[in-house]
Length: 303
Image (tube, rainbow, N blue to C red; front, side, top):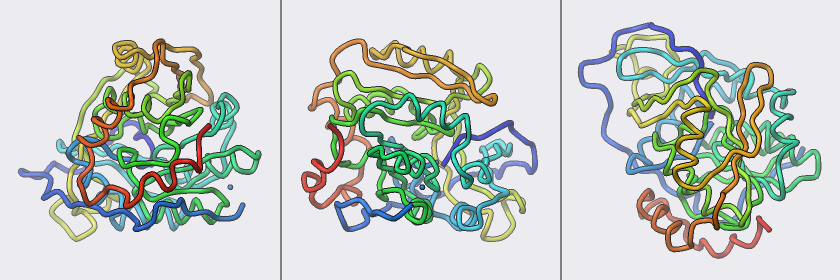
């Protein structure tokens, strides 16, 4: 899964957008899936709705085809383009500018079709992608990456021991709560660990409700325009820095590559306590999403 581009007006919003939240379930295994060779986590009480949305046909079909069109449709009817073709291609120079800055074992949150996880694996780096979309995990495996079908707010392997958390392709917007996502990342990282986040190329701090849409039909037409709305955020670099500093994250690097802005953040104080991280986790995850044996895979990753 990744971040939207410039908004495009297509069709008016429905009078009563959204739908009933749908709970997702764990894959039934605590071990990450693995493949051979080379955005979507969720947060807040809308976890089930968001996970279900990224598992709908338009998103899965786009990943399997390797191309769009695909959008996030806001409740006001604007369409935010998603760059499916870039996600399904090899890691480009802008991606590599972020990967070269990674430290230790890398957790790619909302890994999508897996180009970053695959690129890291090809370089002999330990990396795990997490995504709520089965199609995303499948594609990651085919590229030779390692991936787990799970939300970022579910129990994950190696909690508290990851060297770097990636929030690329706009995934800082997951859950529509940037501060909550940064707190969750603090619980995943080892002391002194790094967040590398991609931000919007404009100065924006936007909270919206969206749904995945192929943009081919008005909302009232056809099954392909259906789906529940879920919270999302779009942040420029200034907004990310504000949220980060408020909870102890300090920028250690900022750069732009191919028009894509990136920020590297490190905690200025000791990372959040285990109790705090568990509270954030439990508040965001329904019982059906919890791993059956979260301790069983915890030692597999991180340092």
